[in-house]
Image 1: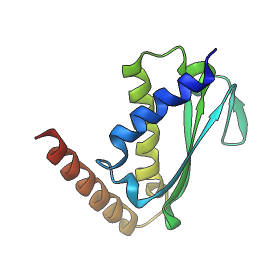
Image 2 (image 1 turned 180 degrees about the vertical axis):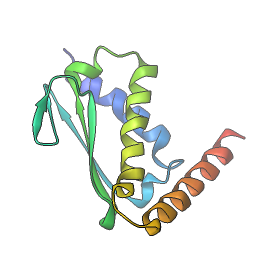
Image 3 (image 1 turned 90 degrees about the horizontal axis):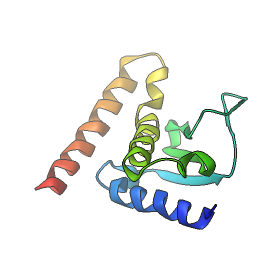
Image 4 (image 1 turned 180 degrees about the horizontal axis):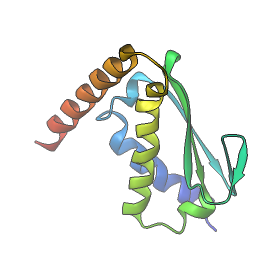
Length: 120
């Protein structure tokens, strides 16, 4: 298995989506694992990726299981990446109160407006 090539594939996708989705406003760390991920305190043999988020500080860590990502097409890997990034943007929705929803809606609006500009 070429782990370096797999990390490069993920970084290429991240570079494409980083600015359009507003991730440049976050301290985002990506980690690569050559085996199962720990999800909610338990080992997951099914998880391809996961996000750990501290939304209050705009900090997040993305973890990817390279054994799993290596089996994915570029398109499927991109979908996994975007799914995990959506957890970064939506994580605070787990909290009570409309303020979190409003902040998240505003962040997503800016992200999609950036994306619209990138598609022109």
